[in-house]
Image (cartoon, rainbow, N blue to C red; front, side, top):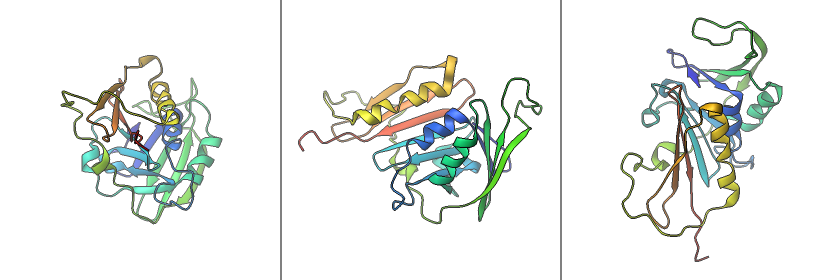
Length: 214
């Protein structure tokens, strides 16, 4: 992930955006969950389907300082992913009214700026923003990341589909994979998986457990 100092630009490698897209709700009627949410000023992006959240923070960012997130509808994110190649970088430039998206050529040998950011444009589009309230990511992500509970629950049920989606986190890091760490506070508290990348980015995946008595 990459974010510009002006608080308006947020760029993803394709595997990062793909991982976020898989956590969006597939139900268009759930408008605030059927979207990608970006707060470039806090260097944070996230998606949520009501059962899980994937939240990524670029180096130097803070997800706890999110103030002005904007939503990009899922159908537009899907269109960009379809057009992007494996090594491309996808840059979102947002303001209060719209989102300009550019696909930048990330192939080997393609031109870059002084910071290694691709500069050759392959695709561009202008998308409207989601006009709904974002899901409350900052209040859902567990706060026990630095101090995990001493006595976690012995058994908990989790939808296996959601567990499988954690494989996307490993693909983000590629050869730099760092083991995912799990914390779990109690029977009905969520799982938290934390993945730290060499580029300073931190990804957090929150998965709600199933009620075993139902």
